[in-house]
Image: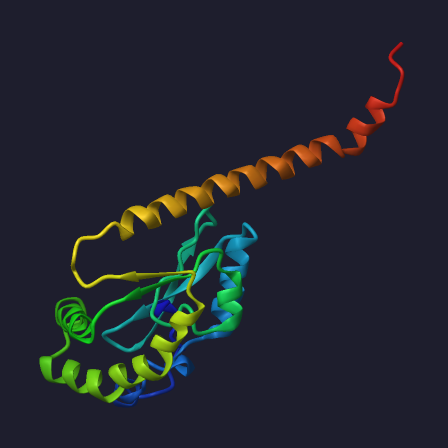
Length: 197
């Protein structure tokens, strides 16, 4: 979901860095909805690419082809009602505050080149408060809640099994549509009711 942060090219670097990226208003929900819907309808999309160093979208996009399984991953994935409705399986990954902080600290320092001070300041200014106010309450919409505190469990096996089941259902639906089109094709109907000579 991070690639769907709004474009802020019109703002200075200091202004972009000061924005609250942990609030739903930070996302381009309209574009996200359109593109998820397109993927579900079998259409390719040009997904935006977000740059965490500049806090802005890059001018180029990434071509994403539709597939049997579409995973929309992000802490806000269950916040928007329209996005939720498009999901076949809604999963909430639960972790302790300590684990969430440690993961963010490692990710932001290693992958995004941020300083320890900026990570800590952002965590306590926006990340933790928005998690409590917006993200955690969204777990009520989840079909499955997975505890992921670094302790080995069978959650990954269960999720993999569910994804495989969804792929099988997709294949069965696709076969049914193809069969229905073949059976109800006008030419097929015409030849079925025409006497052979």
